[in-house]
Amino acid sequence: MGDSYLNDPRHWRERAEETRTKAERMWDEESRQRMLRIAVEYDRLADQAAERARADENLVRK
View 1 (cartoon, one colour):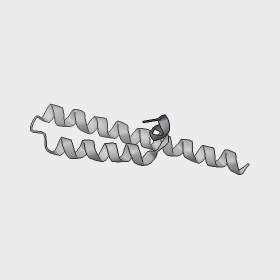
View 2 (cartoon, one colour):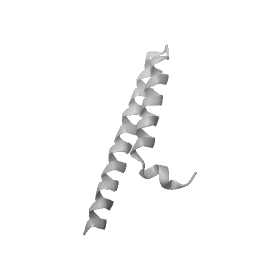
View 3 (cartoon, one colour):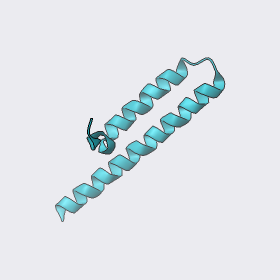
């Protein structure tokens, strides 16, 4: 796998959703909360990837 997924917001959103799904199935509250924090970080990475994509589009348009 190349680094193209690093700049793909969908990749990170999917990871966040997968992580939330796993968290829902956990019995241990501490583990569940850790997984939910990881999901939030995946969402943050998705936001950053989307921002990079917008910046790249703006550079191409100029």
